[in-house]
Image 1: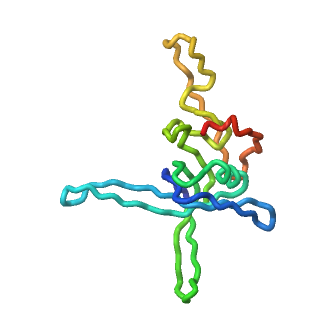
Image 2: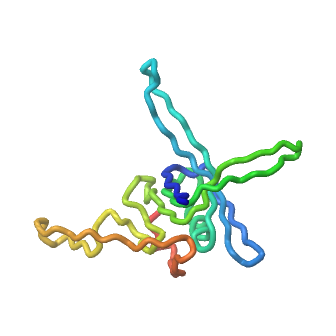
Image 3: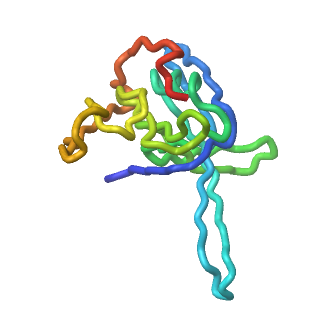
Length: 166
């Protein structure tokens, strides 16, 4: 079986952080993404998808600290079906995403950039690692990428607010 979802969108509300009895952090918020298409009559149509997302562990604490309503994020995780009975006795259900990887897309000033990968690179990744502006432009830069971590193995990193790019 394979259950993997990747979504890029804007947060619909501020993060809500709480702690489980075992001390683990849980953060919930919502994500909105849209799709534009051409209708049969030639006019433009737009479909918006709203979905709840949940972060766990250190990723939940980072999301709560740095994300807020309107921020653009890329999340990767697994789709989950939540089912319950409401107060009137009707059965209800909705899909949600349990986030395993988070990438913040917004940077300073709200402009999009290469983003900040929660896996360890908190700065703007739009320029290559080791970039030297005095180096001749003819020299190609090797492609380097930050390691990816799932939500459960993100290392504890001591960061002060001056190091965050947004």
